[in-house]
Image (cartoon, rainbow over all chains, first blue to last red; front, side, top):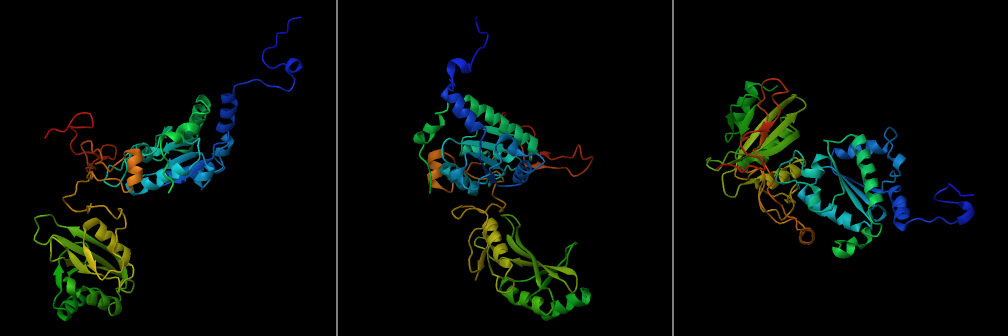
Length: 175
Length: 205
C-alpha cells in the first residue's frame, strides 16, 4: 500500500522532525521580539497604547518591553530624534546584543517629519540601520502592529546567522 | 490696582524707567544695571512675585539696540501682568545681570536665553547651554541664523566616525512653511512660501 502522506510520518520517523535550522531559529526569534521602547516624543504615547489591553501587542509575543538594551533585540524609535539625542540612540543601539532590529515609528523618526530645523536629525537611519518605517504623525497603534508584523515577516525571511556577524563589521560604541 | 496712578508713581520713584506703549500689556523699559533692584522692589513691595517668562528679542543686525531681554511678571494680588524690557547696551557681546537671586525660576530661563541668543547673564551660577549641546558654535534664534541650520560636526566624535553622520542643514523645500491665517481651514494650511523649488528642482537664485 502506497501512503499518500507527505511530510512527517511518526511511524517512519519516530520522535525526529527534519527541518532547516533557519526555519526553526527564525520561528523562535520572530515570536519573541523584545522591544526597546526608545520613546522620544508623542509617538511614545501611541507605543504605550499598543502595549495596553485594547491593542495588545502581546498577541504577537512582543509585550516584554525592556528598558535595558542588554535584554532587548528590537529598538522602536518613537519620536523626534534631535542631534543632541542621536548620540544616545546610537549608544543604546550598540549596547543591544545581536541579532537586533530597528523600527522607525512615525514621521519624525523616519524623515525628521515636520521639524525642518537646525536641531532635528532628518531621519534616524542616519545613525542606525532601520528595518521598518512607519508613517503617521503619530501612527495609530494598528499601524505599529502592522509594522511589527512586517518585521516578523522580515525576520522569517533572513538567514538566521546573518545578524550574528553584523557587529564584527562595524565597531560598537558601548561607552 | 494697576492703573495710571500706579504707573506714574513707579515712573516718579524710579527715574531710570520709561514707559513703552504696547497694546497688549503694560511695558516698562529698565536699564540693565538697575534691573535687579527694580525686580526686587516689584517682588517685595508691589506683589509682582511670579516670574512667568524670561526671554529676549533680536531686533536685527542693523538695529541700534540689537538685543532686549524681556521679563513677564505676574501679580496674584493685582491679577495683572507687567512686562519689562531690558535693552542690552552692547550689540556684539550683550550682557545683563542675572535675576537668579531675585527669582530662582530665572535660572533655566536665562540658560535658554543664553543658548538661543548668546546673551551673557552676569552673576548666573551655572550659565551653560540648556537645549543645544555644549560645543554648539552658534546661537540659533539670532536673526542671521538660518532656520535650516549650519553644517557642524555631530556632538559625539566616535558616533560621527562610525556612522559618517553630521549636523546638516535641513531641507527646506521652499519653506519656511507658514499659514496665511485667513480663509477656510482647508485652504489655509501651512504651505511653503516659495513653491518654485523643491528637493528635486534647485532653487533659482
